[in-house]
Image (cartoon, rainbow, N blue to C red; front, side, top):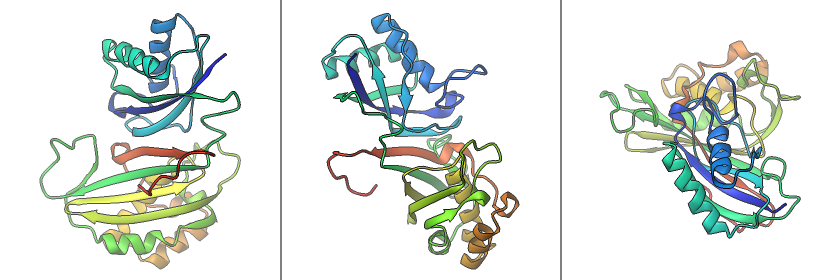
Length: 256
């Protein structure tokens, strides 16, 4: 069966997350329903990573096996028409034919995420559900300095959910950068894989550093404690975006 690789964008506000669940509508279900409506096929798609309820994506990658050898752009357009008709906040940005051994999850070399914080006294209107509103200033340079304590190969027990199903808490964090653009603070994280709630845990801890409540040494001590109780509060989901996935053979892309 022909295999297709798709790049997916979605607003996660109205969904229970990426993965199909019994307790509400998921992004995975939205796409599988669109495929069923288009082709009559009941297909199980695989995504490059799971996102929680309220988390957004600009570059989630999936693969799907279909019985028909679709022209990629026609498949994209047809699926988007069905998604729009169903009122889904999901868009198929790109479709490409993929080799049989391509796996959206297991072939991934690197995943890139963005966490957005807006620091201003006034509540958010246009950016509501698109960023974490913090109504007081944060020192982004202090946040960046603290973030560097987390880069590298570590046991991230402190920064993963108690419900994380990963076999090991050990991961290699390639990048954790903090920058400011006016009222907007951006936290950018890159690694081959992440633990459940890892980036939101980072963001909550780095906010404390930005408030002067934690030093870089404190953040390192929290990491070394390997204790969930040492983590700052978990940041809300609406600030998190799944930005991109890198695969073998892809054209080199600039850092995002």
